[in-house]
Image (tube, rainbow, N blue to C red; front, side, top):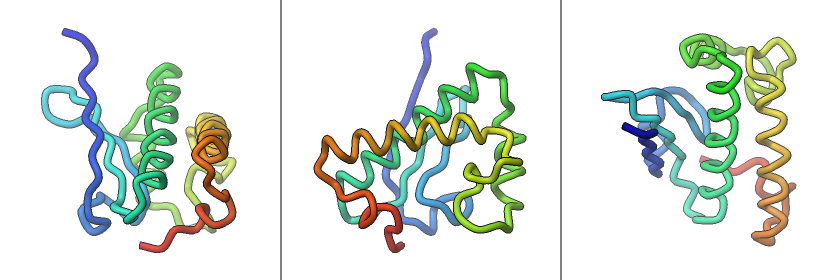
Length: 119
């Protein structure tokens, strides 16, 4: 059977940890992407796109989602965990962010206004 993907918007408190987006393997090996409800469909699309790209790259590179979860859930630095050069998926996160920025431009979203959405 082929790849099974589920992307959904959820209330922020239903995310596994404090974040705007998350991905993990769910039941029956479904790739689950969850995005915080940001009350703006364009912002939610941008977060989902970032998570989708980042996840595809980490799977391709063989980086364990369990390792990513551990890093993210114990992260205590500034900014997003993937921004930290010690992150196991740092390069993949940066690439996903660049694609997210390009899509934001196409959706006519000001990156500086979008960058710090409030939950």
